[in-house]
Image 1 (tube, rainbow, N blue to C red):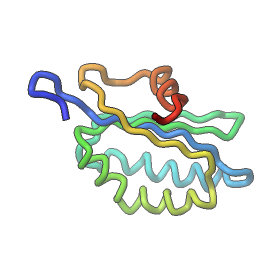
Image 2 (cartoon, one colour):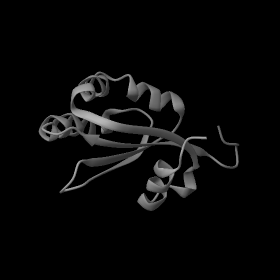
Image 3 (tube, rainbow, N blue to C red):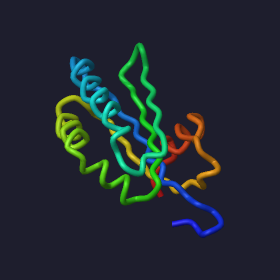
Length: 120
């Protein structure tokens, strides 16, 4: 990942909708995950967006490397939220991209464009 001259980060993006009647449960899990993020080793930054009126939510996390991202994904709080998402969420999309550290923070228009790009 990256060369000695250009350090890279792993940016993971998600887009998800909560299911009808599941808004509170979905956002309870989301709040727990966000509260736990500062405890995660290798986290460079994060951002969260959601529709005040609507069902969509988006996350963006930046990690120093894939191992840090993977450790977060395996954390108890994140694993519980993923398990609960089987009931609370739908239309989920996740992608990870390598980004030069000097290009962080990624802007939301770029993140949304990447999420809207069909998989290769």
